[in-house]
Length: 240
Image (cartoon, rainbow, N blue to C red; front, side, top):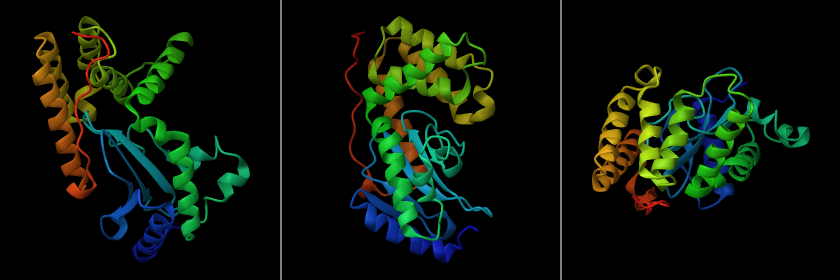
């Protein structure tokens, strides 16, 4: 059985306190989230699914791009997904959602297994490249589209990991995705504008678009300024 709003308030507050100073609760009622702070280019939080099972879900997103509204965002876990990768005893320690220790165990698992790597721009890029290479090696048996494609490309753009002509081709690949507009109206505006900046070799315009998107996402997520850290667009790994 899931938690009531009052129960989730108690569990989330107790769990965040045990997890430590890097975790805070934001929001009210059923919409309380347990956030990892401070927030840089990567946002991550845990929430309680409002359903009969009331699972914990870990949501994460690269803020340089329009957000994914899928259950786990760009990358994350729910308890069902964890059961496929965690040892049985570890999974069992996470399933009593009425126990703050279950939230702590869940948060510790996803932090170690996923988010510590995703938050680091270089390691996050390596994760996306590894997934893409695996898809290529398997013979491209299913389409590589939507948010998975966008995350890969935006990690390349943000870090400047490829020559400018290749980044332009990458963004065209995103803009041409037939799923783009259907998934997120912001995407249908943002990616063509970013493509135009790269085609003009206008790096200041590119950086402004990335930083503006991050600010918009933070406002939409409701993250107070005190939990947001300053960021800059990294110098490109491959000079323009």
